[in-house]
Length: 393
Ligand code: SDX
Image (cartoon, rainbow, N blue to C red; front, side):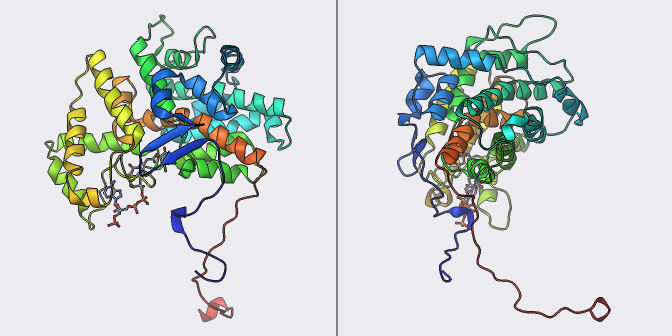
């Protein structure tokens, strides 16, 4: 502590704001959105209902959710000029880089969003446009990665079904999306919808605190989520499990590598800043994993490796002492893969789920008229020095 400044790298012990959106208890493994437990919402709700709950504070009535769905379905098309951006990306460029750029470009197509003094109606429309267009953008990024033509949204479908049709649909024929896939997608998006002041949400808040528009603030959040220590972990977990499988499935060897301080390898999908017990989302996803793979008749060898890895790690003192448990990213990738998504799309799917949470947090920050985020530092650099002309250096 120097003077009035308390150094807290990574904000491990700093409360950045007051919020009424999401409650976490890291010791007890509790997660609630606006007071509703994640277990109940994952079981009984739809993703769009949860999006409404997070953004507007209450579970919607039948009329409210119908209006919400209707408004969103009127804003699922993206400006045709955005295709020029899609065409400009190299075909193998990472979906998260594309998503961050494309979402930020929405501020160019809807310049009214730049006005920090939008009326409530104008701001609600900005939110509706973002929710509607994000699902289209995500599915188009996937289609581009395959070199397939994009599929346009159809208003007859609900939000998640429409996303799946744009993603797995074909120009040449109508495809049936299995109810199992629709249910699994709803559940996964609900489980990712918000998580209080994590890295990407804090990024969305701090960018928005400068009166920057919603699209650019969400674009910044997408970039923060991309990192393998955060949302990018779901891609890194599958890559790690594949590596262990290809290395003969010797789980003990990799657990020992993760404990070796001289080895940069970490068990991806393990550990959490807040959950020092199990991550309630991981528990739900692990169970869903078994259900979905069985219903789809899929036997994925990396699931067996994941379960063995969890078992070995949770009986190892190194992990137990450090309270390192599987987090939301540990099993989610196995389900995404079973639903037919390639590994590179996993973090984009995390972003699609987290979007309503980011919007709700940004909206709360603005409604509470929070000041611009501007932390201080403890200076540890050089003392006074006089300038030395270059010929004398
Ligand atoms: C998400 O914040 C959120 O809410 C995020 C999220 C959300 O919904 O928004 O929940 C989503 O990002 C989940 C986390 C996904 N990331 C990973 O799975 C990457 C692997 N996990 C870690 O890198 C790490 O656990 C973090 C980043 C999740 C948390 O890091 P912390 O809180 O800064 O903890 P730390 O890095 O200081 O680790 C504490 C100790 C260290 O050992 P010591 O220095 O005490 O000897 O635990 C060790 C670390 O070396 N450690 C690990 C480890 N994670 C921590 N050792 C091996 N493997 C790991 N995965």
